[in-house]
Image (cartoon, rainbow, N blue to C red; front, side, top):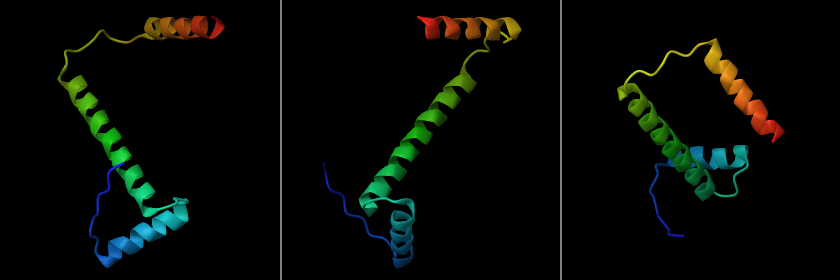
Amino acid sequence: MTTMNISLPDTLKSFVDEQVTQRGYGTSSEYVRELIRKDQDRTRLRGLLLLGAESAPGKPVDEAYFGGLRDRIRRRARG
């Protein structure tokens, strides 16, 4: 694992320390890693949403579509 040092103003350092204590993180590094992972997830999701928004419209979704989807899930659950 690589080390990265960051400088924080006292107010942000206090905030991080509070979060570590209140949320049960072992260290401030664990807290920061979790924030970075969540940001990665948001970035990926945003990219997927933008791709979807730029894509051509799909077929309309109706009751038959959802019925077929439920059937597939039931078959997988049994098998």
